[in-house]
Image (cartoon, rainbow, N blue to C red; front, side, top):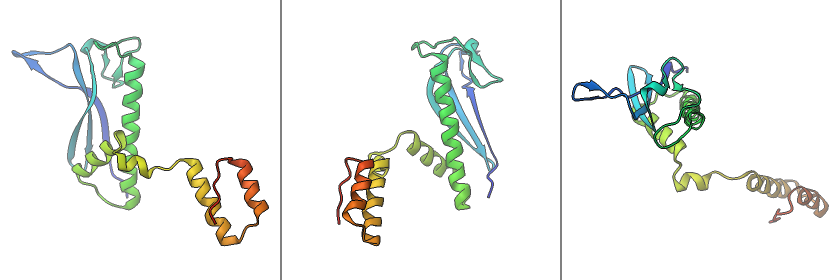
Length: 160
């Protein structure tokens, strides 16, 4: 399944007393798919004069009122774009058309993982140790085979 989508970054259009606000404007991420539109806040603000609407990025060399540099902001915008693409890819692989709420939840969980999600993510050495333990049991490895794997990872705890 291929979910057609459009992900854009733009400044929020606000007016104060009928006059458009041009300073310290929030940067929004808009996701459009399957006739649904979802708005996300990026947590960044920038003056309109420092925003490149064509590139959908902060102009190089600019900073916002919090002294966050263009490169820092643009790096995070690219990260958000990449995470959103990953979210859609996961649904495409499962061959499921997600709801807007599912997209929001998946994106927010990837940007700010809950404690449970962080615990689920195992490190390389944890997975390596599980691999050695399971393969060792299945294949009746000798002590010398375990010693070879322990040379790769000195923290290897062999549980037979």
